[in-house]
Length: 544
Image (cartoon, rainbow, N blue to C red; front, side, top):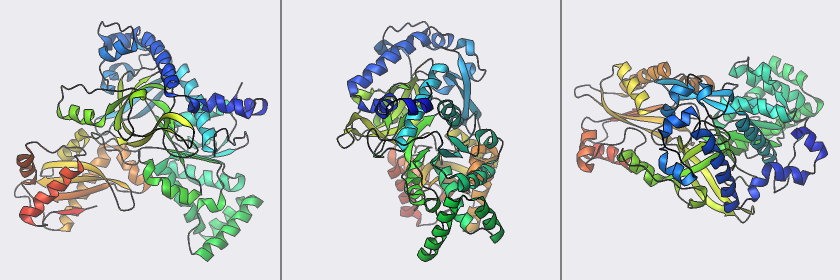
């Protein structure tokens, strides 16, 4: 029975229990589900050609043995099989292959197989997210078959394209614009058509990557400033209800001397967002729409694994999507400094409030990835909630691991990609380090600290500007996702600071170690800048 049919025939309490009942689990009950599904997955995976290749003759009989025998994996361990889509080597038959960026400038794409079991789990958990996005308390939700949802997602083969595909299997919610049309449109065309349809039909739900959602939301304000001809066209497309709201909103905005906001026109039932930098945009999105977005975490390899609930106070993990392991931040950093060190991992019933972790997943239901370092960091912000009457650990998403700089869920900038950019540019850069930093209005950017070769004079801001512009050209050339930051979001994420010659070597002598290339510790960056100030005064320069 589809969810749409259940809405008519099944009690609301039963529906809540079916799709959101994981929130009632105790930690032992959560682990019981995890262990049962993981034992099934170990048998499937160990008997596959892929599993046998990685196991190298070992035969784990339990989860404990599996964790001892199987090393942590990265995409390179699966690339030969997955990039050639060798389905016969996998634990179960893929129904669909999902694509994403692997590493800008080196590996254009990576693909992940989704089995029927994975898709069924994904579908059920997405329905649960839809319900939770409308809830104000346990058991409360407002979802109807005649609801509308603004299409703010990248289409297939990207993971977000699964959402409309799977949701429409369960309920005939209308996407604005319709998915088949949206897939053929450019980003700008989809936004324009979506809001145009929203003016006549209303908008009940909005789901998108937070950075993109914010950019799209600003177009409503632009609509209020459009030419008289375009305004007339918009008014003609409005329903009587929307026309009343529009005229009332224009009067209020004029009185308050502010731009038109989406909340002046649309009354969302549910608002969902995803993406690396969601926390940077949540407050602004709430101001624009009048509803605080509910954060969801999903990815190409892990599928949909976590969601906030009505309190918007932390992500809870679904027990049936992946088997979760957590590498403490201190262990992760030690492994970065000591390449032969194998970091310890802990399970969901072992995480500690306040600790930050790198997530390790084993995809259940016939998935390919086992003990996979997905590259994301979470902080445990509490074990259960007395207010929400939950028992499970709550997490907040921090960012990608330090070796990757992701801006607005668009980029995968690594040491290798920055090195390639510098090499191709033929600029006389002797040494560098890069960090993800945040502007005064909490927007992320890539800050590149560089030291030029001796004798290469940087005399004024114009020269620094040329350096930045030169590097930007090669970032866009090597990484199409980086180029999309400008094309889609209208931002240039690069800031360059030039350090005086000898600054990096002085840091190394003082600390008996080199500074990390990617996301060095913040106090190390401060020390770099202090070393320059101590000897030379403020003679470096920076520009965005």
